[in-house]
Image (cartoon, rainbow, N blue to C red; front, side):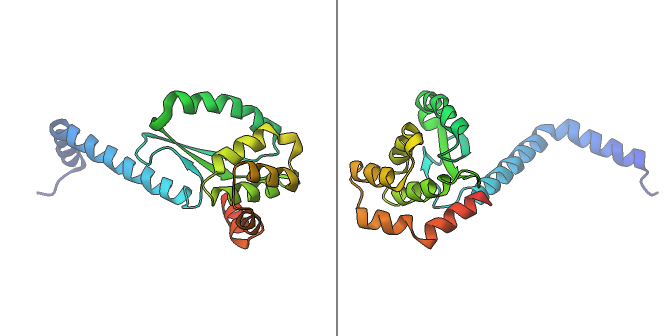
Length: 170
């Protein structure tokens, strides 16, 4: 005799009642794999990252150095990073707005500093001196951080860095 809809529903209900924990474990595992796949798609190798890859929380910050609102948020982000430390992996992505003329050059300079392992230190100076964003400021901060100035200037002007910022914006 063929199974009716009611027969199938009873079989499924009985299975779920007996194996609900296995189903939940499977669903949670699937959700975790989906989230990891999404994170791998969002976070690119060039993105500045602070914190371990094993951190249970990943925060992806889209920001730009000329935005006054982004600058105000920085005051609140530092205590979060300080409080939670290695439990958070912080990822920075550039999102310079078209109507902020100094935002893209600042992003290029920060990425040039990132190539020498100094993104976070460099960006802290840009946030602190947001009203003075300029090539002069970028060079001054790069010198203070003891960056290789020839490499810094070449990277800042490179098509590679410009493409990385464009990919973040996309």
